[in-house]
Amino acid sequence: MIVPALALALLTGSPAQSTPPVLLPGVADLPVVAGSAPSPDCGGMLEVMGDSGRGMVCVGAPVRAVNDLVFAYKREAEARGWTDSGGAANALWMVRRTADGACERLTIAGFWDFRLTERPAPETPGFVGFQVEPVRSCPAAAAA
Image (cartoon, rainbow, N blue to C red; front, side):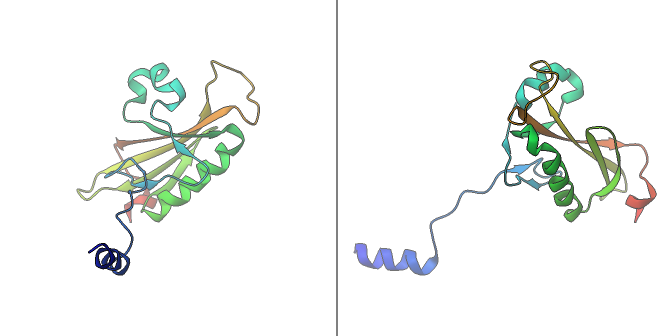
């Protein structure tokens, strides 16, 4: 009885695999990029941010990798219909039109816990944060 069951398992494929983690499921659906791992409390920064951090999710990695990760996540967002909308010192903004014609912005920000050190060493824990929020108007690039 065991042999037929094993043969059936081999023919139907491997047992169910766990689903890889997705950031902002149902909203941005970004896969967790290699070299980063989910960080539920954003390295303690959600507490510092208060209400402005509501809805933010993060991944962690050594701070030396954060810049490259921000751009890797930007490429993942572009592959899912987000359009570049600008940025600032440590953040990129992306937008897309929603099914109901509104517009939403995805912020991708790289940071470290500045409370621990002003100048991080390469191995200092760093984070990439993601937050989606509605915006009043859609830039022309997202209007298409």
